[in-house]
Image (cartoon, rainbow, N blue to C red):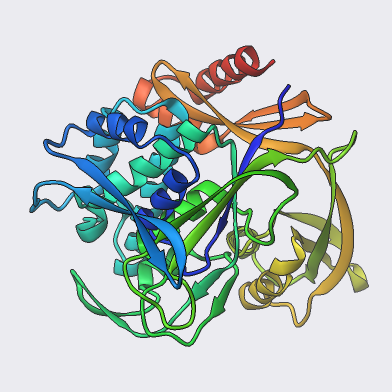
Length: 397
């Protein structure tokens, strides 16, 4: 089995959809292949214009979407149907749907409405559709299986939007970046756009941090629109083959964050577990215990990467009645993990794949995808789960 191809997003000047697309084209993705895929959106006159630019003396590719002016406010359902009919490859389709799903949920939290009531305004425009679909098509052209990303820069200031003047980072951007490592910079401009945030969080999931081990193969630079005074306004991508971790996979550091509770209702304990996961925990669970004087209680435990320790500890303190949390450094042996997408009667379902020394060990269809496909097909979730598992076994086994 050949090594997985990895993409690392180095957000030097932040990240936007057009910047990431430019970087992928600069790294070798076929512009014509991306253009051909975008035609499936069915928008007359839609095209991409790419040209060489320079930022602080650094050569980079800038991308501009060419399309007729639209006066359309698409909701999440309309965008989802447009993507369903675009004829995208299965993995590209799933990645695009996940990016817009995250956008809908983020906008819904900002405006206090259900995700399916969100009208995307700027991010529903044809240029954002082209950016998102262009990026996922470029990833397919490059054969990218895994994506990770650097911490992201956050500037201050104000920006005009469809709803009025908003603070930076934009509220929807911040909602999308919950659990993502950020660092502040002394600039008053938008460095990370909502579309850029949706893409990197959908693609990288929880893989934010330093460059993972890889054998470097290609590099690309994508240019942003504005000139920044203190840094080149570019996003850089590094592409290479995954470095094997050894016969037991990877041994990586982690931290156990836990507290003991005897005065919190079961419903609130469950909410605290969910909050820990949202704050970046790799896993979280509750164990019943007997406390002093025979009182029943529970231990709430979360496993986190070292860089998420503070965020998850703060979450426990905020969401429970504890007066303190315990920290225990640990090591974890981890399977080599990837995400594979299969089709169950034309419905894409993501499958988590675990390998040990290249050998296929675990397959786990993702519950949200299974539930969505089951609803669309009018079948029991367990039947869709079994079909997805069997399809992944055939394709990967």
